[in-house]
Length: 80
Image (cartoon, rainbow, N blue to C red; front, side):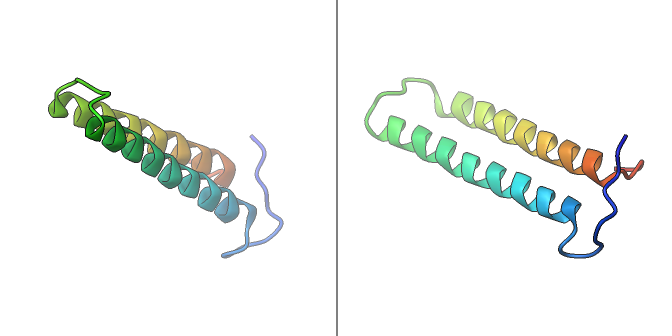
């Protein structure tokens, strides 16, 4: 496994990649939530709200797990 040791601190490669990954997850969460909200408002989605929120929770959790996994791989930390 390759570890990047160019800079340390706030401007390191790992922190930049982590910031990009988590920002992307946050933006994707907003887009998915807004799409579901608009679909329910226009009666395009006929699923029960409990099913929608359960699926949304699973999607968000999986996106964050991928982002944290990528961050752990880049950082080279064994405990992450």
